[in-house]
Length: 149
Image (cartoon, rainbow, N blue to C red; front, side, top):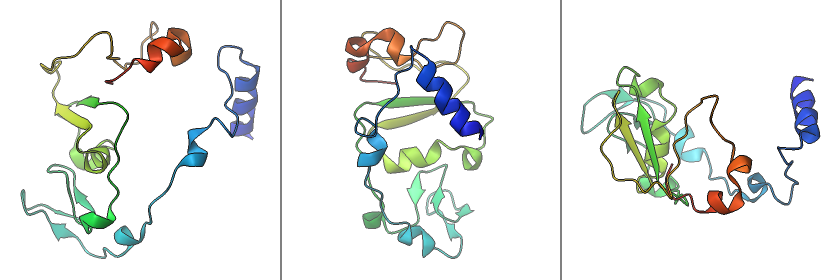
């Protein structure tokens, strides 16, 4: 009951347009088979750090399944993620993203802003504050210029 109530509330909200099934990207996704992961029955030792993990090493970003069977995702923008150094890599849900999209994702483990060059015209910082804006609030034209999160 709860999810239906939330959907109905979004439909009533004039600021959050509801996507039709034709507009929703989820209907166009092509999902790869889970078979390569299902075949892994035991933990493997990471060749780099020597820790034993089942599917991948979250520290070294090495997948233990046959890499030819794991999809590589080309993202439409670059993603830089800043995680707290106290967060354990094996508990973090962002680590698989780096394995699936090595070229487009970088992960920094720091409490300070990393020193990376970013263009303020094409970069968006995602951070939950009261002043944060939705994509609808920044507009389609500004949103289409985003190249880096």
